[in-house]
Length: 154
Image (spheres, helix red, strand yellow):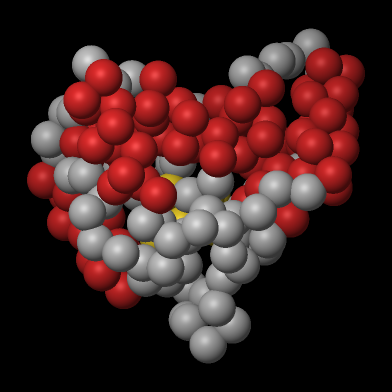
């Protein structure tokens, strides 16, 4: 499911008037299951969050999704559609926290791709629940307090 409904657009912080239990930072892995793999349960839940204005992304997620576009037309269309979703801002604190998470993982002999470290740090900085089905985030959650929604993880 492509995010074709406007939920605010541009960088924004979560609206404090929105029920925090429903607000989610939607990881790349979820968008892929909904759009490319056509998994109905993901499509339905994601559509509900987008319509409610409680589906957020950040630039690392936006970038990962664009990298997967099949051609230039798909890239442009997807970029336009993703741009209407609210993007959580990333700050110097986000970058430092991602390095800190990576450092903690390395001390325990584990690694996670830097882009996932940035996504996790963004969720933590904004006290946002990350909806993901990427098991890399389980390793992250073992070293920091990452609130994750594992709906659909097999």
